[in-house]
Image (cartoon, rainbow, N blue to C red; front, side, top):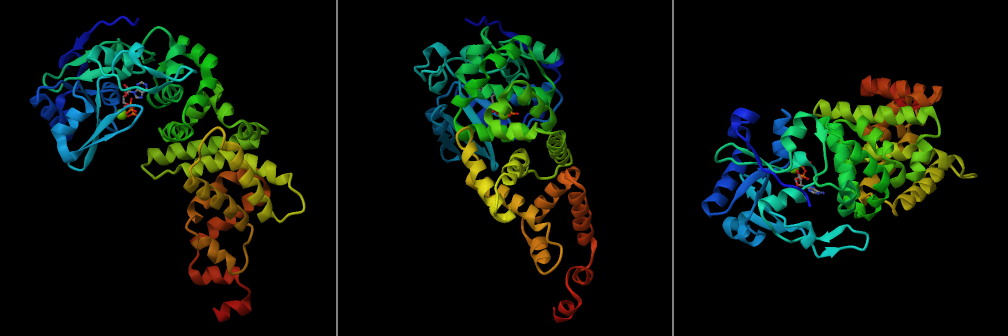
Length: 413
Ligand code: ATP
Ligand code: MG
């Protein structure tokens, strides 16, 4: 049993003022309090504020059941989820997750044979809720009425020491219960600089294969969140350190580590993703997944004989998606995007004739061109193509025509 000892920190001790909490979240909490329920800001928002960061959302927890929450907020509330039932409450067009205190893990009835929790709608009190959370830094409750932080698991002290620690005394069980925690831990270390404890690292190396118990689409979503956390370089390093990346993408991982060029290519892709996020530019999972699987595509295409390059890529692409399917669900729309980026790499070889215009006008041109730039180190030929496609974009339409089309055709156009 996890020992519980409540420590309360007031504003003078923790330094977060109530004004730093989203006004809409405060309205929702106040409404719940007015109805006689308990309600707090919980989890990531309190943690991020303590770390001096801007929370991306404000999660709320209460002793009201989802049905009671629905009763309070009526049409502004929707109950979602099966595994964990929770309420989505809208205020001023903003969405807030309002969860009900979870009860003791021992009371959870639906565990799969492998130990992961498949249904968990047992409600409890705040203390029980705290022990059901994943890391001490995520089990902090902010009371907007008096500005106090309630800390049942030593999270404030851990944050002060930059420590990422599982709640409870058996890290392996916490991973087995919900293996997504492996990826969450890596995200919190990469994004927030919190260091995993030694015990956690040992447990990771022992239990990394449990990741296969996570639903394949949830795994994709969590990986996307991880790689878009702003520190994809560290995220990738940690995923490899704990054998998770090679476990999910065995063939792609072999292809990446096959030579230094490929490894450098991936590093460049990760760095470019981080730089885009830092500068507030948009990112898409299509790009990064196209990068992760690219060395494998090249390797596979090389081994297909007596086919055009286009056919080789098509066959290899189909094979790759089929191979991935067993370990992770890459949504169809993402697969289409990846395929487009790859096929455009072949189109970049064509630098004469009308097809050049079609390439420039392709909706995926920008992403495919950025992808090409990352491949610069591949060969002299690719380097030349990078320069050529960079140059052509700087020219006026007339100059582009002069460069691309034979003299006769230029007149006709
Ligand atoms: P961020 O919002 O930055 O992704 P977060 O910690 O708020 O981080 P959420 O997914 O929003 O992550 O979850 C809110 C809270 O719910 C967490 O802080 C944690 O207390 C709890 N939680 C989320 N996922 C899990 C999990 N897999 N196991 C246990 N508790 C979890
Ligand atoms: Mg959150």
